Length: 69
Image (tube, rainbow, N blue to C red; front, side, top):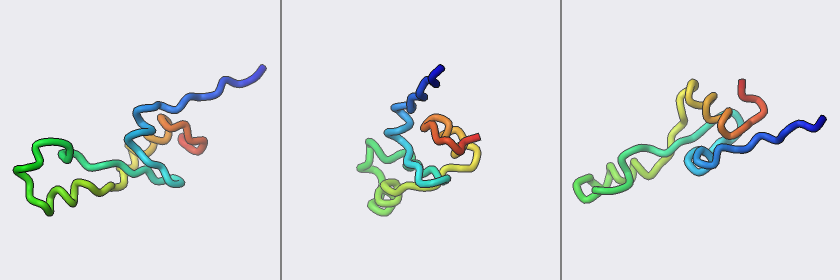
């Protein structure tokens, strides 16, 4: 019997980036109504950050990485 291939969660693939065992995510509040925010805050919102340990495991499961437990 052949094993069924697991499909990647397409929404997660667009939102998260995995490099090895670390998952990166974007920051919130950077999409619209930006005229009220300062330039510094807008620049900081354009960066990415590491996801927490609990969320990293969930992201790895959604992205079907083999080492996710």
